[in-house]
Length: 229
Image 1: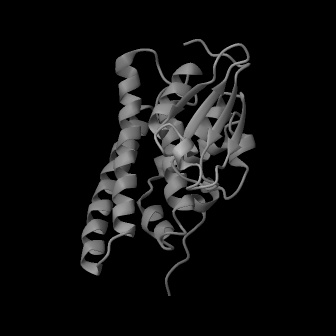
Image 2 (image 1 turned 60 degrees about the horizontal axis):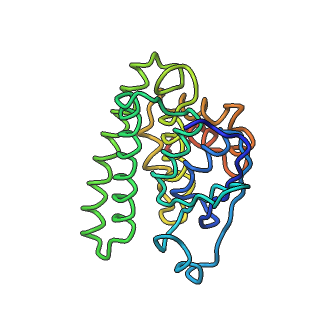
């Protein structure tokens, strides 16, 4: 699909950092005109294609609007439309699998947060901890394979870079209201390679107008941890 910079987009989601973060970053990186819409919930739930968000509306001046939903689907559509993912299906798959692993992490995190008993919470946390260790290992290995230059693949911003940054922003910044100690859980696991990627992505000129809003993920992960007395 050829990119059309003249298109306008509306992204519907809750007014918070969540699973739409990757889509917001991709829209910003694509340098297209886009706005956020925060429908009243659950009043507007029946008016969404599958009764859930995020929802992306691509506005066409001479045609019917194109509407899609599901966070991963929206991300992949935008990534392909604006050249952030390779056209080669094997190279694309290498990037997409990293995003799918992050989805498993979100599910594990929510399971741990909503556990009804302390035993369930401990069991779910153990699963979450193991998944996070493995994800960090895989991400770091890929960064090293690419020369540890602040990118997962190649020397420019890619879909894998964006969704990796989005994942940690959702967990570290977006989820802190659900679990106050989440920063203390995640931050010690981050390798220097991942921290370099996070700071590189956040500083990218294509994303500056968006990442400047709210809390800086790079500032959080690079802030020295106070020594224990």
